[in-house]
Image (tube, rainbow, N blue to C red; front, side, top):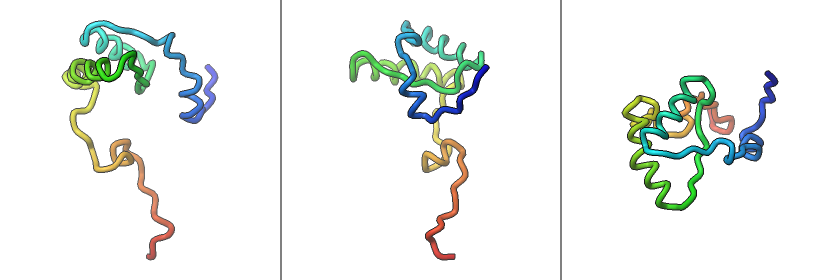
Length: 98
């Protein structure tokens, strides 16, 4: 397997939604997402919606709670910033006086 270490922008550019599309009930969508996670096939999802805001609303109101019930998606945040949520180290401010 070749690992390219692509930047996020290049991954997004190459991503082909037509090959990864799936739909169904909230439980079916959650089943599909869970199977990918358990197989190690992904560590996250880039999701697009056909019709906004209705399909986004349906996903948030139906699929997200199902993923949370299964323990796959967080129900609380772990910190105050994105860096905290991702568990990233906060670098020292090189401009602040010591």
